[in-house]
Length: 420
Image (cartoon, rainbow, N blue to C red; front, side, top):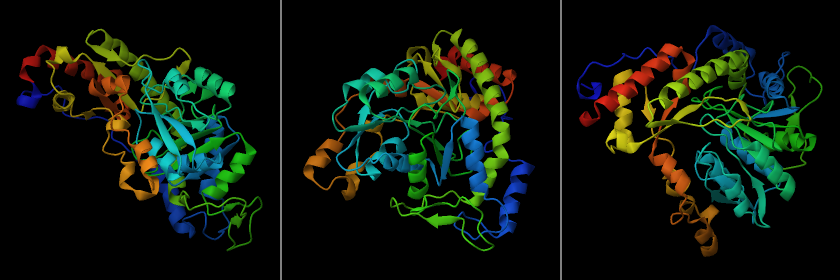
């Protein structure tokens, strides 16, 4: 009998928890609390800024020259768009299958998001679909590296070079993924990250933008700190380490010192964590593929090391009695004590994407008509959303025996599918 109907489960939890907690994080946060400076806009206290140190180390981690931390991943996208001068009348191409912030941040700079469908193999933006909607108003393309794969960066870089349209890599789910020797986020003009609680590197909330362009770096600093930037030399005691620049008007999107300290404490462990998760994901791919009615996400040949954020599995709904995805997820959770859930709803169908509820996004009937995407269709994204199951990366921090239990749970449900 299936556990969802009162039968004995395969296991009673015992999975790795998230977010991580360790003594180093507590020690680093305590240093901030005792320092008297909890924000980069606080006075100099005769010690380095945690935020500036994190920016340095995260830039090195990604193999780029510059990093500007932000309050969250959404603000990272906002200042990336603003750094490129994107605004009223401009269009930005985004995948329809992504978290809402990829599109809503385009609206926040008064530009128009243009949705395109995804590649059925990677579930990331299709380069052919992106090419098909380019107009003279297209000012940026935002490939999103989703779940545990990456957009085809070879093709997107070629498209960018051909058209002159810059790429902003949304790598919020792909910290440390490697594409032909380069890290996710390092190949476009700009790369953005989120450090929200569920991400593989987290400070509860937080974000960052990386780039190799010194002019963009100067703009990014000011855009996230009310037109101020870091001072190059240490200031006297009680003096600020931010100085007014005024070359571009900014807003307050600063990461706090407490968050920066948390990130610094976790960053040394990230490589080992990513390697372990990738190895477990590859093992699970092979095991699930043998069941024939389950379809692990195909990995592009150029993706040398994936980052597992949300492990996504395509399923044959008929093999599961055509039951709703939610019911299958409930059955898996009952068997394993581990949460499974459907992927994000494509944005043209999502309750999270509602630009017409805010007048500042659609102040004319013409603009409102452009932003009304409810009648559009993106069949590949819709198919993926309706026939996939997702599991958080924390499950992959353990051992291969944990992966075996996931396989056994699927086998048990398929054997007893009439009980669903």
